[in-house]
Structures are given as C-alpha cells and as structure tokens.
Image (cartoon, rainbow, N blue to C red; front, side):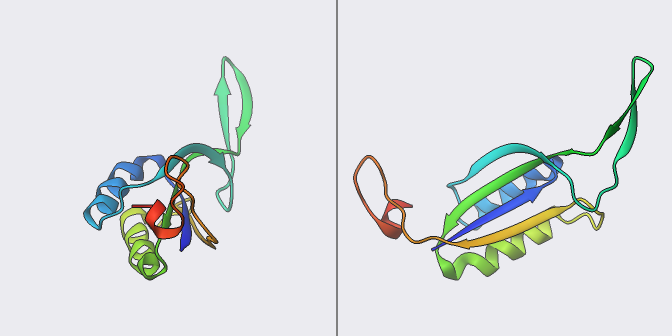
Length: 113
C-alpha cells in the first residue's frame, strides 16, 4: 500500500475530487493548509499598512491506495491540477506498512474497502 499526498491550489480541489471518484477513489482526507515554495511573496495593504504575504492557501489531499494504483492517481492529479504556473503544488508518495480499521480490527487492504 502507498500513501499519496497532494498539495494543490484550492480552486482545483472540486475537479480533482470528481476525477478521483471517476477512477474509483472514494476515501480521502482533506485539509486546508498554507505554504510557500518558489512563489514569491507579494505585498498587501490593509488599512493603510503594508505587509508581506508569503504563505499561500493550499489544500492537502491524502489517500491510502494499492501500489498498482499509484501511477494512475499521480497522472490524474497532474492532469487535473496543473495550470502551468508556479504554485501548482507537489505530490508525495510514502510506503504504508499497515492499515487497521478500528471498528472491526481488519488489517491491510481489507481495512480500506
């Protein structure tokens, strides 16, 4: 099993959610996060005071999947979330040793479905 974690632009989330449902991915964890990377900070003005904005709102989408699904999901994320601009996000892939469903005690892939 693998954990796929994608940090994406918030406005891309609904399209990604629809695409993942189409390919059979229904279990997700979604968090609102903020971060920075190669995007340059920008200056804002609030009530006449200047301030620097260097953290941008993002959405983190996490899912645990079977290893053979990784390439299909990564391709789906790239196609759905790429605008071609700096700040489109990142995809991280981690190995998952085990999954345990708390309610039933099921282990491994059975705990995901």
